[in-house]
Length: 193
Image 1 (cartoon, rainbow, N blue to C red):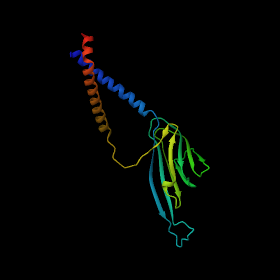
Image 2 (image 1 turned 60 degrees about the horizontal axis):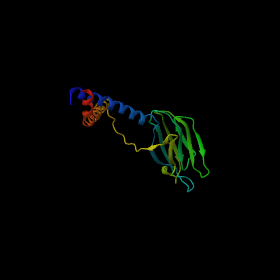
Image 3 (image 1 turned 45 degrees about the vertical axis):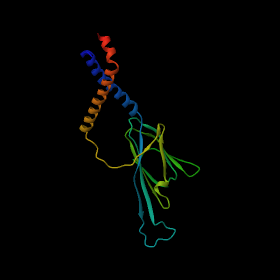
Image 4 (image 1 turned 180 degrees about the horizontal axis):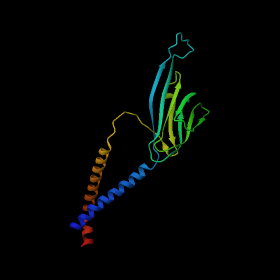
């Protein structure tokens, strides 16, 4: 293989890998991505002096978060409820509609959740209802939300991310280069010669 063909393959592999990475990133990231997670669920005992059998002895609360981690707005976000308690709060205050169904279930309809926006919905209810009895699904016009389990972890620094991306680019370029030199080098050397 001549030096000209080798140089052409090396430069072409870096350019092709960069273009492919940009195209794949655009395809995968230019859409809304809804995630949901449970922040906390608690049962708080009520300290009354003489609880009667008709009076609840505790109150249950939980907070449910919906976030758009994508790069474009999510339209018509629907948060389904098997049972929607009378006492709930959406924070921050946004426009939403409550759509009640005949079977007792309900849906909160949020017209738009912009990229990066996060809302928290806190519920207050009494036993025997549990937090698992309330929320059922979250979806938008673009698809269903992903339920995630939150575990606090330290995020890598910007420098660490840049180093990892650089190493990935070098590795992908090397794979493209070796593949191109194996399959296309004989043809390119004939064309250049």
